[in-house]
Structures are given as structure tokens and as C-alpha cells.
Length: 329
Image (cartoon, rainbow, N blue to C red; front, top):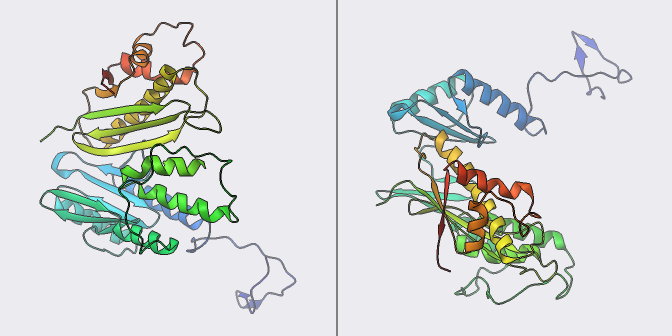
């Protein structure tokens, strides 16, 4: 590297002709390796303090049980702490202030574009400010609202319409809309379509569905599912499948497999929060043929072409973690 102007080592001036290599003892904010170094040091300090790092989400750390349980979520340099015991939170804050220079922002109100409001009925998540900023950036702030985000009968094709002069701007808009689906699940189907051209008990239940050969360009099908914990919707997705299916039963079977994968991840995440998930999750599907394929471990001529990884749902049905339930369409 080039020697900085007027740099001296131990009182001796170093000439510019000499090339030196500097060893970095402390990461500097703004460098590419700064976030990695910060996360490594921060996670090691938490592990020494007795925290357990989640295997389902490496940004989640948990400690204790019952009233002493505390969870910490970190994203770059933003940290969220939650616990039923305020003394445990205060102790953790003291530990963090002793090891790092942190600023306590108080109760959680805003995090990564999400607005959090606390009431007697629970927490309310909103992206109002994020939505208004999105409308302002695209010039649609003064437009009238629509009853539906998209006409469900419209089928888009990559060959229809005029080519965009700057596709990067369109892709950035789709990315921002995908993040908006965190609080607006009703626009998930529309965003997915545009991106191609996205008193109860704590019981897991899921609904899977598919749209066979709906893509006019590739004739691939679309997977859709939504997952509830009790009466609360916690996960949803609408995504085009990677392969072409030969029948509607195969399409539904693949959609059930994708839903089962999401259910498995959610069960692991709930276990990190010490939530009892011993009872099987209910997976509702209206296609009887797909349910029979998932329940019957015997291979037949009509399903032997399906990839082995799709039969992952059979193992989950066999071990009792998922129970398939029929539902009328």
C-alpha cells in the first residue's frame, strides 16, 4: 500500500518509495469486513455470557427458561431484546454497555421499515411510512386506491408490451414491494406475477394451493401457501415452481412439500423460543390425489418421475410432525 503523507514509524519518517503492509487491529466502520468483524465479536461475547445461538436463524440468541427467558435479535448494528422479566433485560443491557458502546433507544417503535405499536391487545405491525415513501418515490402518492391489487383473470407474459428502457429501476421497485408483503399479504400474488414479467392455542396450521401451468411463457405452475399460529398469520408465499409438472396432482404435491419445509423451519424457530410444538401441524390441501401420494410411501408409475426431495413431506407425515387434512376448494 502507499504510505500516507507525513507518516512516521517510531519517530522515523518513512519514504514514499517503501511499500508497507498494515495489520488491522480494529475494524473501521464503513469497510467491507467491518460488519463481519462486529458480528463475530458481538456473537462471541453473547456466547460467553451464556446465550445459545439459534440454528434456524443465526441472528437470534436465547438464554434461560420460564420467567428468566430472554431473546436477542441482531441485524448489523440494530439489536432487539425481549423478555418477560424486566430485571433480566436490565442485566443484559448492563453487560452489553460494559463490552460495547451502545445507545439505548427505549421501547421498540421502528425497525427495518416496520412500525411497532404496543397496546393492551398485543403488538401491531405496520409499514405505513415505508408505503408512503414508496408511493412518493414512484409518483403515485396522489393516486386513488383500488379495491384489488390486480385483476386475477389477467395473465402476464414476458413477450407482451414494450421493453423497459431501464429494467434496473423496475427490479428495485419489485424488491421494495416484496418487502411490503411482510405486512400486506393481500398483494403477494400480484407481486409474484409482476416479478415474473411474490381465543386460540399456539397450534400450527397451513393451507397450500397451486395454479397449474399458469405461466404463459414457461407453462410452469405457481405455489401458494399461508401458515397460521393459532389465528395469527405468520408466513405466506406465492412463487413459481422450478420445474414443469405433468399433472395437477403433482403440482399440489410440490406445493405441499414447499409448505412442509416452511412448517419444519417454523417448528425449529418456535423451539428456540421454548414454545411447545409437540402436537402435529395441520396441512390442509383440497387435492385428494396429492394427499394420497404424500400418505402412501409406495411408489407408482404416475409419481416415480417426481424428484426425491419432493418426498420430504412423506417423512414428516410418517414421524407425526405433519398431519394432512382435506379441505373443500
